[in-house]
Length: 224
Image 1 (cartoon, helix red, strand yellow):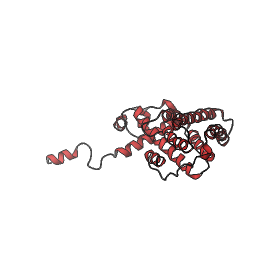
Image 2 (cartoon, helix red, strand yellow):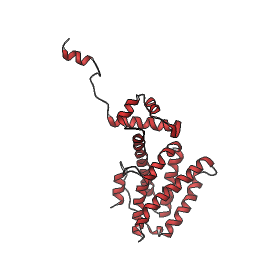
Image 3 (cartoon, rainbow, N blue to C red):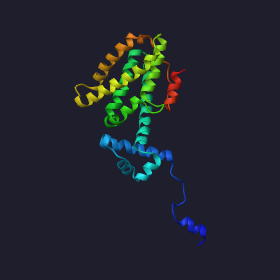
Image 4 (cartoon, rainbow, N blue to C red):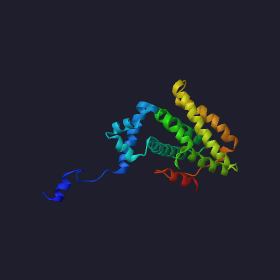
């Protein structure tokens, strides 16, 4: 046997290597399932097991648990932002747009209660350039500028909005004293009082081009 043949017979068989992006997506899927099962107590060993991989494979894709959660937060914030952008395009009356925004956030939190407990605090504080509060800040800034308001209010309003919805939905998830439709109506009434007082009825947001493949494109549309 030649030296070349001997070298080829040992180690990894010839063929295409692992696609890093596909592996990361596989691990993010596994992390979602692990969080759904164990909530905030999930561990990387469980993620690796669900993906049928070793812990070393997890660390080859993500530096640590925090890095994995950062990527998982980006995945879901992008989905939420696209959902809000689509909802804003479906209606053009400002109060209806406000309700649609509240409903997108409430629905995500309802359908992903254990994920929300892990990811929502990160969404509120922001992860890189991709976070829900940053997107809503851009939307509100456009609105304030249209009605001659103070655009500096957009940043605190966006965080107050997400924080209020998250706190309310977290309570509702345990109490269940009403259905989601009624919950969204009550939160919308509260939020709209503030928007209406700032001249929100006169806001007309630009249409956002969908499908949106990343957050930056949504923000780019709003800044035009």
